Image (spheres, rainbow, N blue to C red):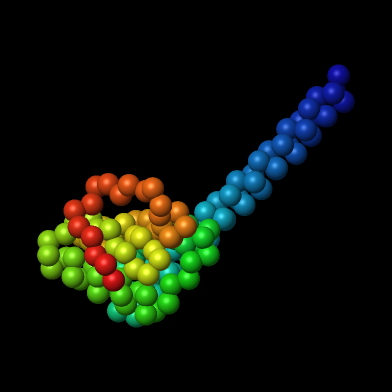
Length: 132
């Protein structure tokens, strides 16, 4: 009986250790993602570029392997400035072969769609479009 109790306790200890290490890994990955986003946005701010990318937009860029140059960021920034001057709050920004939904008041790119996925899309909840 005592041996059985020790085996059960040993099993519980192993399961707790596994659970604990998995939690640390999950939290570690989440912290890395948060810090990457923070670093990206901070670098944009450091360069005087106030545009930010939501986690969703950044994920779309990563998955679709879309790389924006500093010139592209400048174009987005100017488009946001123009839309803001006209009183826009949420805009469809068309640039080269990309469509972006941008929160003008937050200066944040909310999502990104490339030309291959643009066909048959309907963009809603926007009050303006900017063609760059």
